[in-house]
Length: 70
Image (cartoon, rainbow, N blue to C red; front, side, top):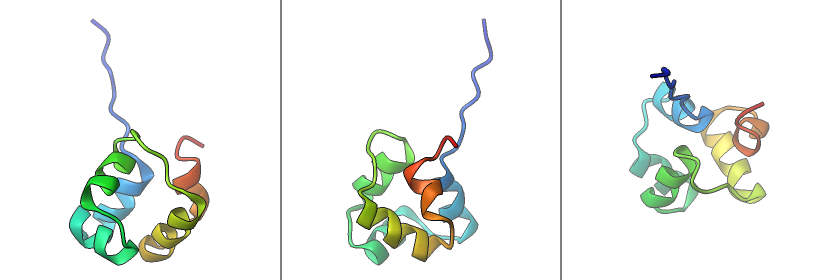
């Protein structure tokens, strides 16, 4: 059986680095905790406006949120 590596999303890595929980981040960017969870698990994509807010709060380039695999 092949080993499958789970690559953490840049969003989750940045949130953890900042010592924030999903609910804390959600409050700061005015979305639900569920929305943050879906973004981190790559089940949803951030709008450009939300990506900007997340980037500001997490101190990361907006491109890390809009294009997490690059």
